[in-house]
Image 1 (cartoon, one colour):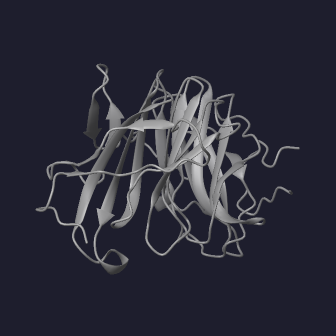
Image 2 (spheres, rainbow, N blue to C red; image 1 turned 90 degrees about the horizontal axis):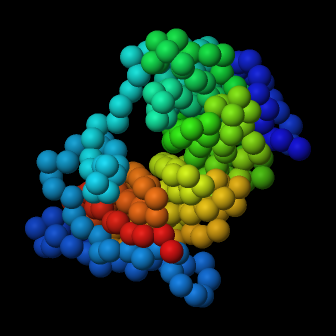
Length: 283
């Protein structure tokens, strides 16, 4: 049974079911694997990104396979639907230039539904949205982490944090028909802390970088799927244990993955911060 089915927009709709920048330019981190055997990712050492990098820049791979940073692109027009949390809207563009958007829309009880829409005219107008996930029971209104979205070909992939009926955590959902129908969401990690996510896809591979929803200090984890997100076969910790790691960004090109995050030193991340980058090859 599908947990979320396509349909026109209705806000009340329910579907059953200490770091020091001066100290060093390189840190060595150890990625954890869920089980014995070869590590899921062969990582390079993490490096500090130059201060000139825009703080909200999106990590990406260029045509030569190098890692780049750029301001996240947005279409000329944004979806304007009732009850939408405007600050939560996130966009993705596929290779053909089609735009997709995902956002939270608040219901009368302050819980929210996750919705998505597509624009076939360069972002000027948007098709009626479809429900992605309606099982949120967290009554925080628009005070919630935005979803992350990636699109390639007919596939649209979403990662997001919410308090579902079965528990709070990080979830993944995808559509295989350009956003017409989103399949049953898959849990990535359970935990009580709301958190930011970033998602990337290339071919059958999908990777989700996320703030670990457990623990006192922030950690950035990476979930890896070789089956378009139907199953996430591996989970690894990307950040180290010497600071509070937040705000992950991830990029994927063939078997090469890049993860960027902000690491804050001190108790509860009150010290200086640095933007770090780690690049690896999926095994």
